[in-house]
Every structure is written in C-alpha cells, then in structure tokens.
Length: 150
Image 1 (cartoon, rainbow, N blue to C red):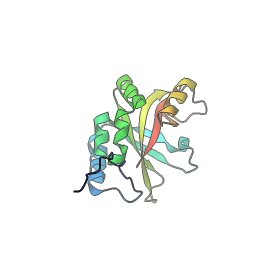
Image 2: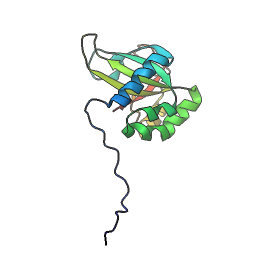
Image 3: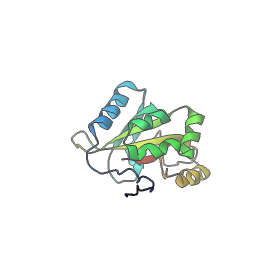
Image 4: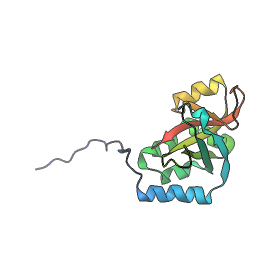
C-alpha cells in the first residue's frame, strides 16, 4: 500500500532563463495595448548603469499574466494599498541602451517619497524608489516604489 505525500506544494521555481513564450507574449501585449506612462530616469535604480524605464499602467490582476513566481505580489499589502490610493500600478521595462539586448522588468507602486513610506515599502519588499522626474532631493517627490520581476 502506497501512501500519498501530504506535503505542501513547493514554491514555484523561477529560473533566470529566457521567459516562457506565453509570459513573453503577455508582456508584449501589455506594452502594445496598455496606457503608457512617461519615460522614467533609470539612473535612480542605483545599479551604476545608464538606462531608461519604459512603463505602462497595470492592475493587480495583470500580475497573473506574469511568471508564476511573481503571483505572490498580487496579495502584497503595500501594493494593494498603493493601487487603491492611485488606481494603477506601474509595470516597467528597464532598457540599458539601444544596442544592448539586456532587458529587465520591474513592478512599481505609485507613491510620494518619505522616510515613513520608505520604511513601509522596505518591509514589503519594495526597497528602491524611482522618482518620476530626476531630482537630487527625493523627499516629497512622486514616483514608484519598485521590485524586480523575474
């Protein structure tokens, strides 16, 4: 007699390999069909690379179109609060340079930079802030609390 395992299902595995064609197609459709946001300065990503962020408005439901390992973000309390405050989220494509094939994706929650928001955002995994306009003083600036998407 065999016993079935009652163990909880393992966490979804995310690889650094090229995204699946289904996810890639969904992302392409988002950038083709969703409302675009102004280009954001990628210099605020603190990665030392020259980049720009092309982005669109999305809702929490659109997170389900991404790779399964990102689905947990759909129930993130900080993200949910930001969505209900601003009525949208930002899905961004970080473009390093026109002749560079590297692309990465980010998810942003709209907000205004303050030490309190920085603390709360960090607790929920959104540890970086990208201001809408390049500035040397972040406090009081509108922008996006971001997390990398795999």
